[in-house]
Structure formats: structure tokens, C-alpha cells
Image (cartoon, rainbow over all chains, first blue to last red; front, side, top):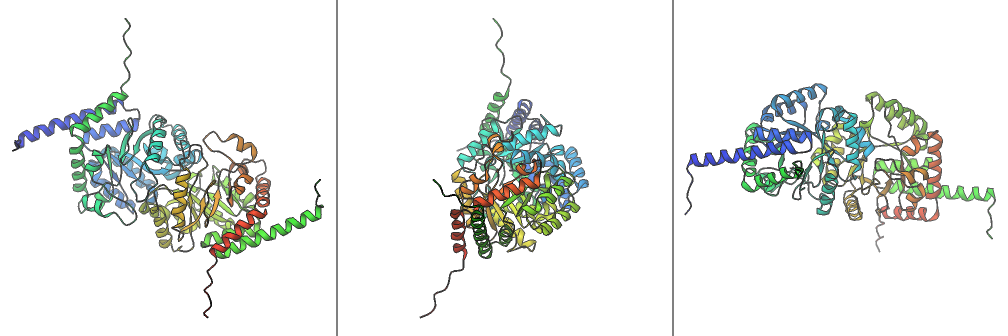
Length: 300
Length: 300
């Protein structure tokens, strides 16, 4: 026989767990080395959301409409402006206004994968001068650490040193991806050695002791079973967080829902209720300690 | 003691070797499965050039000036329009005119590395609708075969099925690149299984039995010794062709020369004189046989 908690007892326990997680995220924000991720963590605490919307829309109108519906529920908006028809400077201005108004951080999903000198130029020139407006950008590890040297040089050139961050992809969720465990370990090592620019990782199952993880390929249970026919596989929110990740990148799971706002909230609540479980909060606390400045022993 | 050939004997031997290589390239063009690469091979034979110019310039004016100087000497122009300041539709029109006038094929160095559905959209929308004007685009293998499915779908959607081709990166030349031998073998396997869209490979030392190879990181001897300070390493033309590659991607080696036109010609002549050596022509001939339609046995 189990002793059932009364509804009010359950609510009280949930509130305490919420506050505990919010406090941990806030303290991690204070101690985390990258400025853009500090902001993401503070927003996550405030909005009780670790949801990243992957805005894989077709047109600029669809993008703005989607953000207006879902923006208040997410901590990060991930987009590729180069996939969107009719995207222009006005669209960008509106997206940046919405980011302030609805309080989320922008991650441009550039997936930079060229050599350093080229990546630096792409960061400064491509997609409306990405370095100037996107606090976070994604990068592949395949070309070696030069991609990070290039992004760091680009951030400096754009006046965004110690502000912008790179999200390095260590593992991908697509069918037949070549990001095996050895690759992932090398990518994570590369990231940890370049924390002047690396803000976090994209991972599936292998994580860093230091850097936080974003995980794509999160869908509902129906999607998880089915895939998308172009090689994309899906996992559930519980799978991903229990596997050690922190931020859930969700695209079609929200976009294709009948009510995207409601669906985003459902994902937010589901992810949050997993993340506030004791073992996950404890793991965040361990990470806070890692980043705390070491106290100098008092002289005798 | 060696018997020296007279200058006229040498010239005669060189002319014969030239014709032999030109014939092999022409026959390979006739039998090679990808239409864009057929054109590259035909141009290579005609211009006696396997030189790909990597136009890593800063501005649109520099791009056009460089092409005007070097275009007649190359078989392929590789560029990233997203790295170039002031690049606009007029620049693109001019580049396409120059490609016709000076007879070279364009490779957009997109290094697509996202999942299939995103890559398809980037191919159709990004960089002035790349699929419409760039017969060749580069792609990373890291995300798995979905990147190729996405490009094939994009080529179809752009009305360029059986015309456009993808150049899959199997190895990279940058310092600390994660394209180890196992990765390269997997990428080559992926390419060979997707020859409806894959036109050729980017490799260093490991090649395909079927698909031709492009190799970047080619510089003069001084560059080969020095690198660029952002993680790029260099090899010589002889190294690369003797290692089994076919097309040499050269950027700064030409661009930064006092006389880029003359330097491009020097690279062209050097590469050509290596490629026309007996063993390399024999290797091309083996490849022609692989692609020749199998003769059906006559009925008894």
C-alpha cells in the first residue's frame, strides 16, 4: 500500500522542487563562464523553461506568427534565417524586438563547419552579420579547433568578445550520423579546451562535466516511434533529461501541433517536472561548485 | 650515364602525354555519372587544367577582379558568397557570365552539415538560391546520408535533377580535423551509395574507386612548411596527385601571389605535368572502364 499525498501536499512538494531548481539555475547562471548562457540560465529559472524552439518554418510570416505564439514559453529560439523565404532585415528587427519583449535568447543554427579563416568571415558577414545579433551560434567539430579559433576571432572583430558563445555539436540525432562515441569525446574535449568561446554543447547521450548540453530530436511519443522520412529520429523529454542533457530543442513537435502555444507549454511543463527531480537538481549543484571561484586559504 | 632527350624529343613526348591525358579525361567525361562533373572533366581536358580556384576574397570587387585574371586557367571556381562583403545579385550575374565566357564550373562551398530537411531548404533558399545557379555544392558527411537525400530532393525541387551534384567531404586538411581514416571510409561509403546526387569527394589520402577527388590545402612549398596560423595545413601539387587525388583546390597560393594569373598558370602546369605521368593516366583509364555501360552478351 502506498500513502497517497493529498493534492495540497503534492502542490507544496512541487513548489519546493520548483524553487530548488530555480535557485540552482540562478546560481549556475551566476557562476557559468559564458555570458550568453548566463542569460539563458537566468531566463530558464524565471520562466521555468528549458525549451528551445527550433523554428523550422518556411516563410518570414510563419516565423513571426510562431514566435508570437510560443516565445513566452521558451528560453532560446533556434533558427536558420537562410532556410526562410522572404526573410529580410525587417523580419530580423522584429525577431530581435520579440526576443526582448518575450524574453528569450537567439541561437543561430549556423552549423559552421569550415576552416577557421572562412568561418570567421561567415560569422561576420553571412545571414545579416550573425556575430552582431545572435548571442549563440552552432558549430560542428569536424574541421577541428580552428572553427572555434575563427569564431573567437569573429566575436572579437564584432565587438562581442566575452558576450557571444558557440554551441559545439558533439552528437547528432539524425539516422547514420557519423558522430560516434569517439567523435563525441573528441568534440567535448575540443569544447572544454576552448571555453573562451564555447558556451555549451549539442549532445545526445555523452556529456561534459563542465559545459551544459542542448539536445535536439525531441518529439512526442508518436514522433519518437515514427521519424520524419528524411533521416531524423526522435526521443522523449524524459529520455533526454534522464540521459543527462539540460535544454530540449523541439521543432516539429511544437510547430505542427494544432495549438503550438499549448503544446509548447506541455513540453515546458513535462521537461521542467523531470528536471526538478532530486537527482537532476543535485547534478546541477555539482556543476555550480565546479565553476565557483576557488577560495584562497586564509593566511595563518 | 643517362641518355638525355633532345628538346624536340622532350616536346614530342610531352605532347603525346598531353593528348593521352586529354583523351582519358574526355572519355571519363563521357562515362562519368554526374552531369556537372562531366562538364568539369571536359573543361579539364580542354584547358589542360585540374586547378580549382578557392576564391577566399573579402569583397565582391576583389572576387570579380580575381576571376577576370585567373578564370581562363581554372576548371572550377569554388566560392562562399556568404563570406564576401557587398556580394549581391549583380555580382552573381557577373560571376555566372564570367563562368560562361572563361569556361569554368562553379562549386559553392556550402559545407552543408545539417539534417536533410534543413539542408534541402538551405540549398533552395540560402545564398541566392544556390541550387539554381551552382552546379556543384559541398557537403559534410557528419550528419549522415540525410544530407544527401536533402540535396537530391532540393535538386529535384529546383528542376536540376541529374544536373547538379554534391561534393562530399571525406577528409579535411585543417589541423586537428576529426576526419580520421574510419570517418573517411564511412563518408566514402555514404557517397558511393548516393551517386544519384554525389558528384565527387573532397579527400586527402583516402579515395574512392568510383568517385573523383578534390583536394584542398594545396600551396607552394613555403606555405606547405608554414600554415596560416588559423589551423590550415598545406601540401604540394605533386604530393596531392601522387596521393591519388585529381583536382587541386588552391586559394591563398594563387590569391596572395604578386601575379595571380601567372601563379595560377604555374600551378596548372605543375599539376598537369604530374597528372600526365603514366601511372596517373592508367588510373584514370581504369576508372573509365568502371563506368562504361556493360555490354550485353550476344545471343547464341
